[in-house]
Length: 293
Image 1 (spheres, one colour):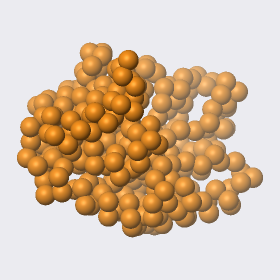
Image 2 (image 1 turned 180 degrees about the vertical axis):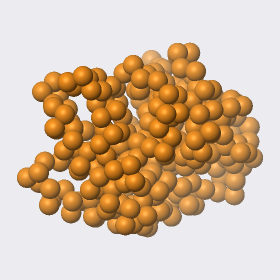
Image 3 (image 1 turned 45 degrees about the vertical axis):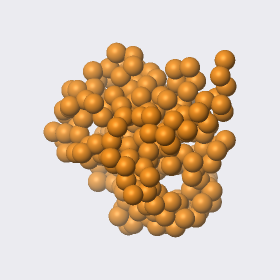
Image 4 (image 1 turned 90 degrees about the horizontal axis):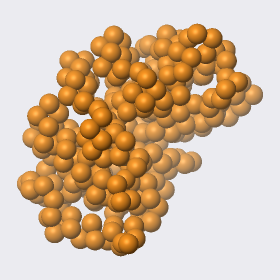
């Protein structure tokens, strides 16, 4: 069986040779975006390639696929993917890419509030230099003993962070998985969160796949609470569109009706363990769909 490293090398050669969907080539060697479409990628989709080959190679591959925006998922001590914000931004710009959003988080307790907020101050400054529109907390710690008071504590915490990011003209958001769609004391965690954050300081990045897995209806959430969703994760079990279980057209139709401008492909599992092929297949599916904007 072909191992992952050999596949990545082969895929990189294929991309360099143009063996992908024919499009115009940009001056930086990447592909021009499909006219009228702004397809973003959560870089977590290529996390192992980042580890093995570095962020520069990943960005080159992503640009050649046709993606125009990325959502980062690696921040530590003022650096993004180990790079200074200025260096990261330049590398993106050189390839015709923009980093419009980033996932990052800190575990919060009342006892560590000062330390956590100082961490956010530094993180906000770094990402502001890159020019992101959004900073997104991708999870929160819960278990079977979690109470509504615990969720309220997180809601207050997220609102406090949202005030900080707003001062830098960055929106702060929360990204769901499926556990937010269970009930505590008869209340759905996700609905409770939507009702208990400051809507002017915390938005929600709806992950349509995890919402569905949890029993929620992504279209209904977008329709019923249009002001609380600014960004979307387009996701499937593996490659976008491969499972046949998700009807993406009504989701995109409602996103467009809500005037949502930013959305990101995320691929967490890969057929044949081929991350590059899976991310490319996801792009191709969306590029060909007439309802995608």
